[in-house]
Length: 221
Image (tube, rainbow, N blue to C red; front, side):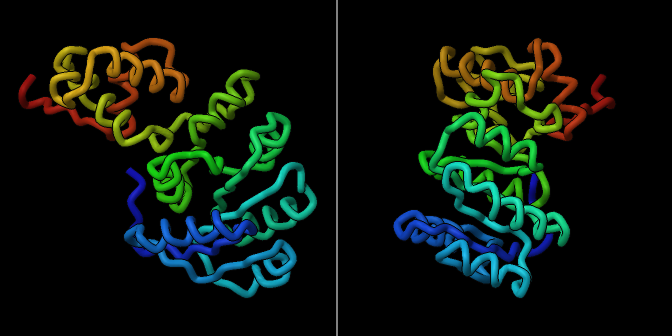
């Protein structure tokens, strides 16, 4: 869904030692991704970002540091490169400011490895991705951009559930196929509807077909 045709050159700018090492290890283990530069301070980043060729900037931000963020955002947007924000804040105003600035990817430092991996893959090819905690935060105020409703926002398990539902499987069959409970299937369905801004389960089939998640074999009709 968000596969790259070439390797992704990653510029890592995380200014906390422990999280920086953790992100570096995660990216190094991710096939198709390579770290081409690493900055340990905001000053270094602002001075050196223009000299590095990269596809994806993974940037750590603190609170309301909007001045340097504005500069970095302009540099990335002007060069046509993508940016994933990692934040340790869940302040609604800060997150809304990031969305308004056109940031396509936001995850928190409490996110799971799966969410961060999905975010790296999605944002590196231009999709939007917001982790669950960010989604919950901004949806409370109805500020999530409508264009954020993309399949890249779904977890791997949610995609499996969506595909099985769109193929006409009952809740019981979905549960049996994935070896999970009916309650878990229903929880995944609710999350899918919420993330994709779809009001009815009926619309899931049309959505899945339109986005290439399932195909219809008309020869069997």
